[in-house]
Length: 547
Ligand code: N01
Image (cartoon, rainbow, N blue to C red; front, side, top):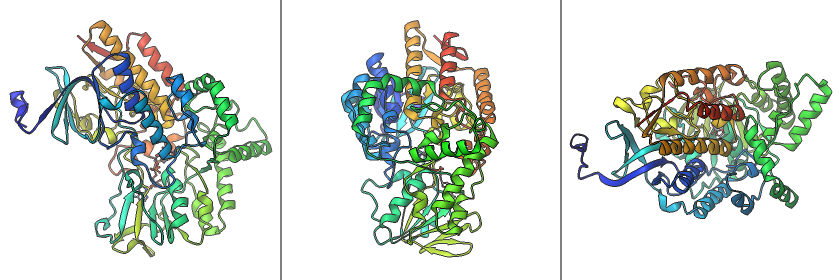
């Protein structure tokens, strides 16, 4: 654009103001970051959000059955006791509508809306080294400048639509679960083909099967799933929460995964096989991710993990009546929870319905999408509707698609060509005053997200406050700190069973051409929090400030 040279805006670019901080995204992260910077530090702050409402991930994920796998009383902010007291969740796991209602309530309660610009997609962000500020362009032709740029874009917001030949010729309609139409999809009387059996597909399939004429599930990798055992929250439990919110907060802040329960401090081999079976049986009956917390060594010791894996595989074989389907569903090739374990409501039981079939893509891969459905090597599967429950270009995808350019024209895509490299998952060398909330290199997706988000937002806010008090204009990670942290992220992951799922999105393996690097920090939220605090105590070790 002409203005690059003249330093002035061209006629087509509208000056949309200068800010202390621009935040991209109005989900859990963006809303809380706005509140902290605007109301606690008094900074001129704006949130840019591409959607027409607040909610982030939950604005888009409206597919049938979309529900969080963190328990509702833990999937919320804990920074304000009054907010905690006033909001009451209805079910053990919150559905997508209820989470959106909650986030809209937060936006209203703290008068955040005047500082959120909806329908505003950032098309590029460039650091101007001379002026020491970020220059952001929007798709609508606006330009904003800001001293700080904070990405609050979520980890799972860039949809992965596989490049299957022939999709453009499909005669019916197709949808990705992460871009679900707000008006819903009517499956009545339709033949539906659903690709993908991650958390999303596992939530979606039972709901689609209820109304569709026929559902065909295309499974590439068999997956573990635990019963959610969802249901309404009792008044007694609500009362317990009212009286124990400090305790719940403390447990979430001090545990590995930020959930409101502790991992049992016993090995799977401290008990007899009969006792172990009874422990798993009880955890299965209770439902939810707490199953993974039954023993301390499930994520570090293959033999311990095998005991849980075998228990779940045996359950699948018992739940699914057709032995062929049961064999395909239980033929799982990776350790339990090495991919994020879904929790479900009647997923395996759905395969006992006469209107549900299963295709094993390992032995019978998709050859093409044709006008009337999906052609696999062995058969033609006719369909009126295709559902892609095929996940996301996780963690790096949402950041790279913004088009971020740091100092000396270095793009984030170039800086991360070999995989994400940053310090504490917070800052990238060459990108001054850019902070990423729950980006790669932080515990993020291995945790209950709101707990990880509050920790990141509080750290970023304290860092900016430190700069303000000390008259510092810029902050940036050093190369040495980013190298050391990136190496630590890898070595911590290697100490667990997580990288053994070679096809996991934690490793970027679901996106062709993406570097295979374990992206989240696997050391746990409590340890990570301690490291972040120590860095501050040591005078922001690994960060350099400019006047
Ligand atoms: O995505 P996924 P998701 N051909 O990547 C398959 C969170 N989440 O949307 O395993 C055929 O896990 C792919 O196969 P494979 C949660 O963190 C949370 O289900 O790569 N199949 C896999 O089966 C979760 O982990 C909630 O071999 C293809 C599936 O599609 C994350 O989102 C609810 C394919 C994708 O599974 C992502 O879950 C839902 C291809 N070309 C989701 N490409 C909560 O409750 C991919 N697949 C908070």
